Image (cartoon, rainbow, N blue to C red; front, side, top):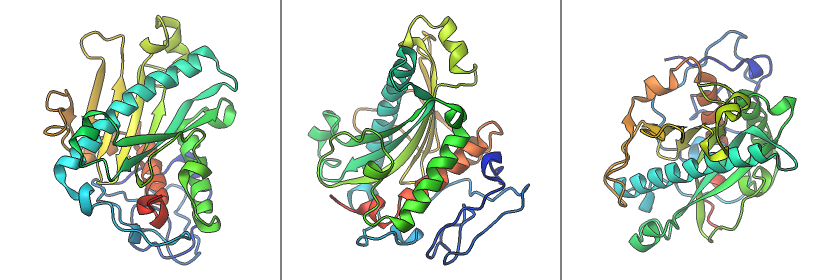
Length: 304
């Protein structure tokens, strides 16, 4: 299955130093070599992304980590907990995002934001911590409203390019300090576990149109694209104004069976079907590239 290369990046190559031969889904490879796909090429993206290992990315400084799909996060039931907690946080983040833009906070946030997800490895297997929602944490990156932040694909393209550059040039690259705008406080020992793109522009129309009919910020719809460490992709369409279905959640892997989430309503979809939707191909493509870039030796398993 091919995924259309975003127009925003079709004329400029991604450049990355180091060995990236184990990362087939992105137009990056070789020791500092530039890889420029043809202008109208459609890079191949596997329909199912496997678990990300530190060895799948070139070194960016710092010490080597261990793969997240070993240890506690290799347990299927623990993975279900992480997926569901990520959904909970992104549903809340969508509402907060809408409120910030609705109220016109200064500087005014753009309609698109990124959320970097972290997991506390010491708490993830503790039922008490899971019940208290002390497992998954978010480091958000809000964009300032303006021409450069009007398009989600453009936002992803710009942040991914910065992340690629920092992965090579910055010692101790940490997405929380180098990319996030408000990382907040997190426990020691958290590890990077995924990335999400939140947007207030939904299939129903742009946010400017939604706010004309919504009663308040929390009634405004939002959409969130999520990619997690275990290859799970989740699409969350939040629509609080719909009393029958306030959110439609589509996931490529199960959300049932752990942490009290057996009653969550969600739709099982194939990765090929989710990533292959024409309107969102470019978003998934760039989100995957950003995820692989951040999930290097430090970002994936560098316990702090």
